Length: 116
Image (cartoon, rainbow, N blue to C red):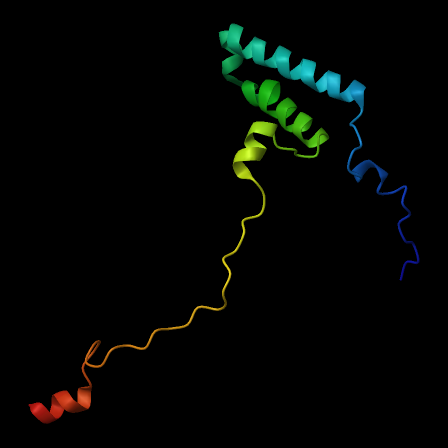
């Protein structure tokens, strides 16, 4: 059984208010912008290759996902306002099953047999 326990330094990159590495942030933004322009301006880059696969995924989608992950999957401010947060639950308690009114539902098979 390991005796290692994490120190506060282990969680330092995940503390709120920490900014991502500016060099990596700039590199990913540049890669995303250049890839987006390349896909928009060069029709051959909208296809795929046998060696790498679909070009727009590597030139646009992967840099965008990496940049989003670098910012810890934060939502943009406009989308954050729409999504809000965790949904509030209605007050009250557990829902109760209503009693079925008499005569509703399936007829009693014993009564149906006697009538026949």
